[in-house]
View 1 (cartoon, rainbow, N blue to C red):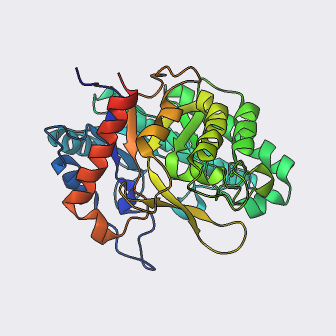
View 2: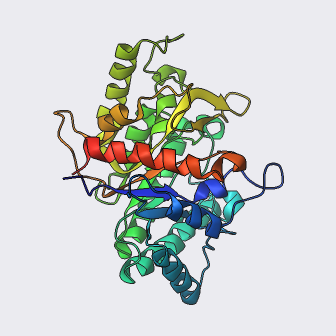
Length: 345
């Protein structure tokens, strides 16, 4: 029999992230939902969507009526809502987790609003699984000015956010990425989660595209795992590096993004780079998606962990021309089905 878990979700936020006045226009939520619902591979379809709680998709200040309409709309397409991204960054109304008291208060308030929405969608039956996603909302450059002091501030802010999440029966997943201060390497992510010390409430959100760059030491040369000038045809060394990373972060992982990466970064300077998500069949992609997903979804003994009830495809930064092609989502869904068949239950 085919595996039923983890459920397969598509992320809606690629319709917003990287879009705007200096780029392409955003893709509205209805279009993202329609494309997700329309994708099908041999009769298998996406089970749900993960959402960014920010305009013009879903306002963090949505009323109950707004949220009920959202829940009805999603369920009307035979989908559910999964994980939610809290708008913790200063441009979206939040504040740096290592900033001044006022900034950190804004961060926690964004988490409070997100958890309130998450709880309601769960109680209304529209959200059977999922977490609320956060990160440090600050850059490695500013963080490095007082690495140890700033790491402690971030940990304290996360603990305050954990208190809020627990009051709503929610969990927080911190997405490590090379552009987030204190979360820009494997070592720093583990250090931060240990300092937070709330493993039942605050865990890690692993994104296959972002975490690949940890192995290369971007923004944290001393923490690199793969050798310098690494030859990407050396699959043995790549697998060894990825296993070292996943062994360290897997125990904390409570939410998982399937993705592809070509091992390049965008941005300029030394501390503002971030990863490129690629299409699943991109010839420049460095990951064997199905095999390497198993490094996250199976423990060190090869057993399926069953720690995540749904997995999500993250196509952040895809051009609109790519995102509006039906074949894009069929290709994505086909790979995700293979991940579930390989590492699900």
